[in-house]
Amino acid sequence: MEYTREGLLELTKALVRIRSVSHTPGENEAAEFIHARFAEEAYFQEHPDFLRMLPVEEGGLARRAVLAFVEAGRPSSRTVILNGHFDVVDTDVCGELAELAFDADAYTARMGGRDIPEEAREDLASGNWLFGRGVMDMKAGLALYMAFMAHMARRREALGVNLLFLAVPDEEGSSAGMRGSLSGLCAFMKEHGLEPVAALSGEPAFWTSSTSRESAPFRTLFTGTTGKLMPFFLCVGREAHVGYSFDGVNAAALAARVVCLMDCCAELMDGSGADTLTPPVCLKLKDLRDSYSVTLPERAAAYFNVLSVSRSPLDMLHICRNVAARALEETLACIREAGRCFQERSGRADSPVPAWEPRVHTVSELRERLVRQEGEKRAEERLRSFVLNLPAQMDEPEKSLAVADHLVSLVNLKGPAVVVGFLPPYYPQRLNLRTTENERRLRSIMEDVCADLEKQVGGVRLVECFSGIMDLSYMGFQGRAEELETLADNTPGWGSVYELPVADLLSLDVPIASVGPAGKDAHKDTERLELDYSFRVAPQVLERVIRELSR
Image: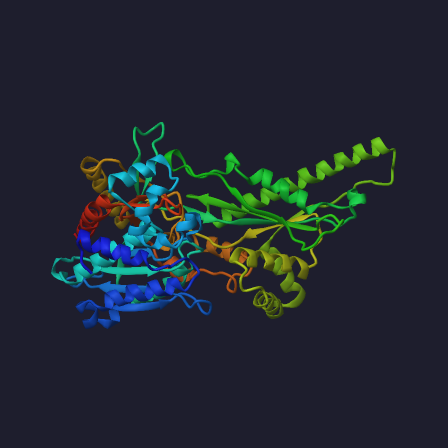
């Protein structure tokens, strides 16, 4: 692997040619390619234990991550983690060029004949952009880190800090790669007495459109990343024939009320200033029956994407309880008023609205109820047995929601009620709080780098928090252990459907930053890489950051 512009371009194109779409065998092909490229290097032939495949899952595709380690020229525990992912999203949006999207040169050559935005057409005409699936998200970043590792392995006398490379599958899904390899990463660091002082991501610096506060578009680098929670509301109504609807409570109406209170609620936005995050968004709203019926839906559910920079799972659970209580109150008030109007208009007195007692429960409360009924061992067996019989193709959020629904049945919960909890995946926020020497040092380095980049190439901004979600969220948990316990206790199927290596997460406190290439339109058919910045400027930035961290 050559650490030159030409070498980086060649390696990027070779990685792009691997169809490593998330949840396909191509992910294993990418892992094997990366491992094989490192294995060609003399350093790893001399130190074979410094190159490993880490299993990230049992069963399924048996996907693996790749770990590579280069020791500093002088003995040191100080270590910089270089992280990236090798999976990509599918190419459905590329239409008739879907297969060609994995050949960056051929795809770029064909882009001029497609109906693409004017900005993309201008970039194409400049000759400074390469199009293709994964070319910027994030095969170029992987190529940069791989070649840099090989380069420094040949020049260890100039390396003042250890380099620990970790490339993972499934970042685009639920970060199964990072979650599954975290224990192996921590075990390796413990085995070799390593102190992680920073973790760098090869994710690209996304070009951001100009706003009223900016005179021109700019590339964004970051020293933190947002957290993600996925709270759910399982609404339990009361069955009744539609002709006698006031005898029951429509769970679908209750769930709709929850959505009205949660979706795009400005009061639930987190962050401030330029780091204000978008409010909760409903990802799914559905009733939980499989066929047509003229009975009121007894159960319905909604779940939400919630971004956070300050709220813990405990905070979010409290918010959800309040939302659920309000939704119940407003739904029942609506039913009572409609019932009053019905009696007044019909003259009938035989359809009184029952005096319901609404209740809000957490998943952990229902599980405790099941344990009281059947005992700890039997309760656990019944839930695990249910999980084992769920369809293999069902995704993690749906499996977790199915477990919650089953739990409601097992405890015979009657409505009107709402069960609140969390569905996978979960991403902790990881912010640079400037509370440790490592945090302050990395932040200072990145501020100086970005100031110089602005003078050199223009259009660069350092932001506190990447507004998307990413694997470096798992470089530690900035909260109390009991807050993670709240998450585990209120995620149905924790340990069988989904789990986090909690002990490893609590053991880490690693500041993060993005040091990678630059590009535009990730996941779109116009995904493209800025060549000059990515293969001339980005290597200089990486070298400088590592050099500064070595002092």
